[in-house]
Length: 356
Image 1 (cartoon, rainbow, N blue to C red):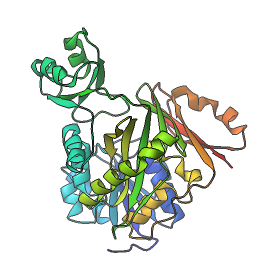
Image 2 (cartoon, rainbow, N blue to C red):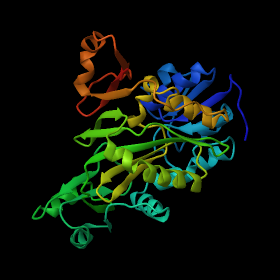
Image 3 (cartoon, rainbow, N blue to C red):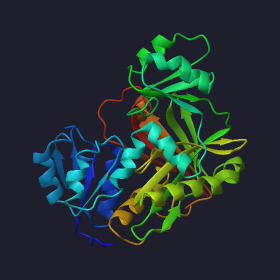
């Protein structure tokens, strides 16, 4: 394990709001962040020490980026895995590229969770339109079609009911390899948020109860209702096994459904996560700071609650335009991500409130 002293440079692949909040946390610990992203208008770059704007497969840009960094991480799971081989040969890369390989493929992800003893929704692979009927016969109706690769916040998905026009659903998901996933009867959604250090130590934050609207996270609350707490140990055990099997370093998020038969694994995110944004004010040490601590080889911070109850609301689209009204409540902690256009479905910020 190598400890990087303050003043070192942390490279972050991806230029969105997660990179922005990681950069802020790193700066507070005395580190410099270098953002690498293909988008010229990067909200992370606006608060970072350096910015390389280039495509992920541009080796002429990746090599000097890696040379300028003491460690490299990433802020979203759709960073191409191929170029990471070049980076990890030059500088430590956390979390490992194997975590991206798993998270980017829904079949691989589900099989990985099953191999570690988890439970998933019933699913079947759909390589083309001709596979669709047989896959849905296996999963039953209703079901959801999800592209195997890419897709988040409800993108690349279609809900299917008995009698639907399957050709239209196949068209709507882009006619790409997909999985058909049977519906799970559940009462609540929740996520396990953990951080694993280079020495193998794992710490958990309080398990948040998550409420989604139109496939996008709307509200996260901690502590969670009792039905979630009753399933917390089993969900944490699975998340720990998954992290240890990958020799994971950094923050890992696993999303679950709380069902009558226990926690059902939904998906993993090998990064800091929207359902953990409440930790900035609501935990002793935020997910962003602990991710920086982990990848830099520092001792992990306390993950305990900073209040009796914490509630985080995402600000989607025009909801962020109410910033003045939100700030009129002095107890609100407002985070705006610096994005220009407040399009429908776009995460523009979040607001967190602590209850003592």
